[in-house]
Picture 1 (cartoon, rainbow, N blue to C red):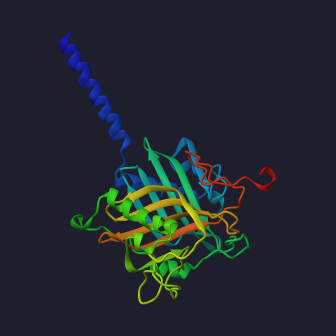
Picture 2: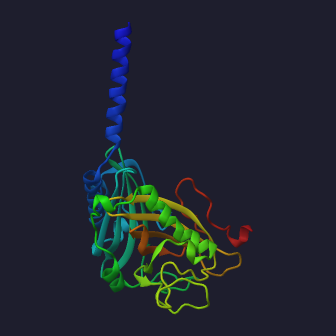
Picture 3: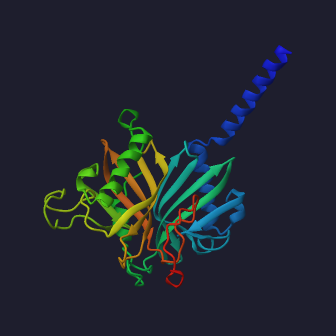
Length: 310
């Protein structure tokens, strides 16, 4: 009986170990799934994208059935392409552009892989014709050439120069805390660190007022003007690529009460080195007030009620 018990324990441990291994997806595995998924999207063939039967996808917080949305509009991957992987979270991501006919859109997409299938995809898609800060058409920040010129290449940082994933997330979080606290000194960034929204630079302008950080009297990623942001909500650090020393995070800028500016829902790509932020690139959109954002668990309710319900 004792031997039988030991054998059962061994078999159970082996089964659990095998299940855990089946759940893990290393960089090569994640890369293969990401390529298969992206190929399925641009060829308009969801059946060939390796999707889970309960696959869920959103585009700018709207749930999209397979075959619709970007599945129908994308005609190819664009001129700017970066790929990142997080085996710890079984997550892969693409940041860059896609072609939609003769136009190009800035995108960020996270892809979740579980049990050898793609279970989730979350897209941020920005087009030059998108609404701006107060909803006016075609006024969203957008600069494809600048994005191509400034987005760092994919890299494999030497092991001795890598920070832990916990440290990378903590450093990234100082950027958001600096915004909500309106205190430049909180942000752990290199002097002159850059920030771009859909490729459009949001730094290097003359600093107004005193007591701000910056470089040579110009703003940088550490220098926080008044965005009218009450809080940076969500802060979903969905991918940490330890090899590349980058962090990708989804978040929402919630505005101060009565501020006419729309919320900003975005994916930001942080490149870090030497324990500080070197550059920030955002793919984002300004959601309408009635849109539930981010529309992923835990469904935080980060949207105001439409006026007719208030």
